[in-house]
Length: 122
Ligand SMILES: C=C(O[C@@H]1C=C(C(=O)O)C=C[C@H]1O)C(=O)O
Image (cartoon, protein in one colour):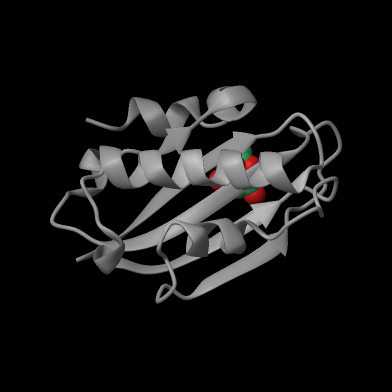
């Protein structure tokens, strides 16, 4: 069964090194907490807020072994007042978990984004 897994994190600066480090931390935790390997991954879509253009998060994914996973990066909708310097991801993965068992991961300043989603996790 293919399930969707959401994640998000933030960086302090529009800096390629920071984006790489934050993205790798997020993706590694998503795989660990959901007991997934890269072989289980179907695809992933990243968005970054318009204030982040120093690097593509997809490059970071390849640096941790996601070379065969189809990836896409796009700019997030600039809703006034929304969280700044945010990297979001939607991963599609093969898993036996139910929807409620999926661990969605929101780190750093993004931790408050989707408390509703976290509350529905088992
Ligand atoms: C609230 C978020 O930001 C935005 C809103 C989303 C939503 O309402 O589901 C999803 C992604 C973003 O476009 C989030 O990342 O979860």
